Length: 366
Image 1 (cartoon, rainbow, N blue to C red):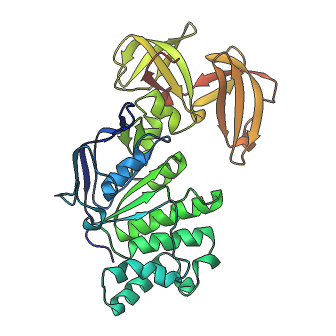
Image 2 (image 1 turned 90 degrees about the horizontal axis):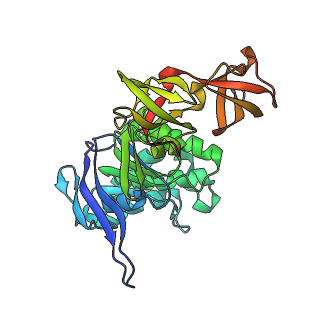
C-alpha cells in the first residue's frame, strides 16, 4: 500500500522563539543535524522541554526553522506548509470525529483530497484490516476502548499513504498494558508498510522497543544518536547513561588507557573498565558507569565497595537487590534467582563489577 519510502534530513536546524516582553529569546532546538533513512523508524527521546516535539513539528510544517534546512525525499521543504509536505501526524490527542463511525473517520483525509469513493472504500478497508479494526468499521469512536481509538488515529494517518509518518507521544494516554501492546503493533505496521517514521517520546522503554535508532536530546541539542543497544550499552555521557536506563555511577581516576578500555582507581583499588567513551583519552578524573546487570554481590571485603542489602524485589525471572553503600543506593540485578543464593535483607555484602560491561565516561562523578 505504501509508496517507496523516502529519507528525512535535517541540516543544522535551529528554532528560536522570540520573546516579545523583553525577556531572553528561547532556543528550543539548536543546530540539529540528522538523517532518517528510507523505511527507518527513528525516535526522538528526551525530557520535557528538550526540543523533541519542536523538531517533529518542524518536520511536519507546523513550525518553521529559524535557520537550517529540512529535506524530505531530497526536496527542501523548510518553508512549505503542512499540506504541501508528504507527511502525516499521529498526535497524543486522538482527535476523532464523534459523529462519524470508524470507517468515516479513517477515510476523512481521502475525502478532502477528492479521492474517488471506490478507491476510498478500498483503501479504508485495507488499512482497517492492517490495524486490526476490520470488525469495527461501523462503530462510533465513543464505543471504542482507548487502544482501539489510538488504532483509528493511526489508521487515519496511514490511509493517505504518506512518505513520512510522524508520531507525537501517541501512547501517553494509554495504560501500561495497552502501551506495551500498541508498541508492538506500531512496530509491526511500520515495518510491514516499509514507511519512514519519526517518533517522539520521553519513555525510554518505548524508544528502546520501537526504534531502529534513537536520538537523545537535552536542552535543544542532540546528545547522542545510535541504535537502542548502543545508546544503552555505550552512552557517551553521564546524562545519556542515566536517562536511558538504571545505572550506578562511581567517581574514579583513570590511571591508564588499555585498548578499548582503561584502568581506574576507586577507593584505592584498581578496577578495569572494559569500555570507555571517546572523551576519556588519558589519566584524570572520570565517571565509571555500571548497569544493574553488570554488578555482582559477594562476601564483604571481596569486591570494590561494601554495603548493606536494604531490600530485595522479586520479579520472577530476576531479583533486584538495593544495596546501601558510601556511593548511595546501588541496584544489583540477579538473574535466575531460583538457582542462586540471594543475600537476605540487612546482610552485609560486597559489590564487584563485570569488567567487560563497565564503561568509563567523561566527568568527575559528582
